[in-house]
Image 1 (spheres, rainbow, N blue to C red):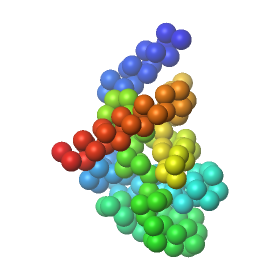
Image 2 (tube, one colour):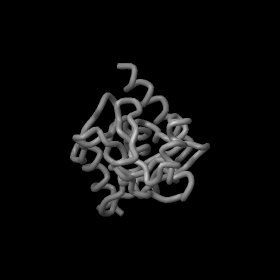
Image 3 (spheres, rainbow, N blue to C red):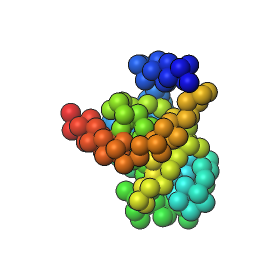
Length: 151
């Protein structure tokens, strides 16, 4: 248990991977969000599905890819509904530390009709940590995100 504590402490002390940013969005060097995964599939298939570059749209300076033209159409109609919270950064890190931390697109949660993404690598799965204190972390993440995006 002590080793897990130190892994988490080192991770959130600044030794974590961060790709790129378009504004406050978590994107790669080509401004692709969610590492190319289809944001609509989290809601419709309840899993992470890789999108195709031929089905894409730009929203809030991030390019979203979709696995089907139908998912592209759904996103186009209501992008705020499908785009991940906190610009696609780790929800746990946003709530616990107010930091932008990379995610694993396959580690997610739909809560109150919103998509939350989490870091999951090695021994650190932040979704598990989030679930232990969700209501407090959600409140703090919303507050921290608001502060970060208004600076």
